[in-house]
Amino acid sequence: QVQLVESGGGLVQAGGSLRLSCAASGSIVDIAVMGWHRQVPGKQRELVADITSSGVTYYTSSVRGRFTISKDNGWNRVYLQMDSLKPDDTGVYYCSAFRGGDSFTFMGQGTRVTVSS
Image 1 (tube, one colour):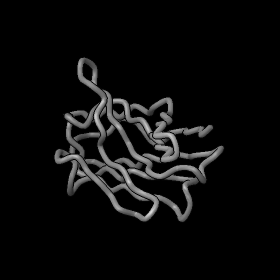
Image 2 (image 1 turned 45 degrees about the horizontal axis):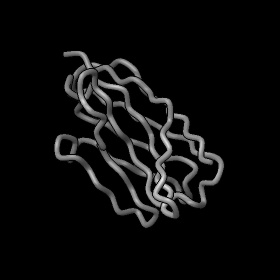
Image 3 (image 1 turned 45 degrees about the vertical axis):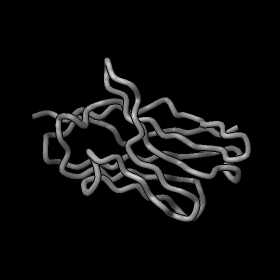
């Protein structure tokens, strides 16, 4: 099992920045990819960014150039630096951990981000 705890959400004005943090514990040695997903009411949860164990990153087009995902040397913490925030970035952000052996994805409880215009 992998436990994920997000922090760092909050209320920020458009153009501002926030840094989300995800603390992972448990069987983290089995993790292949970690990422951040965003849930907006009425829409499907979407993948915002992810990072592999070797540091390869992916960003959805709407955040590319504004968000940066990073991790520590292991999988103890994963971060999402969010700059130049827009009201459309508002949502609940979930940390995820993908276990390669059986293709199972763990999700955290989420942290809310609200960007005011």
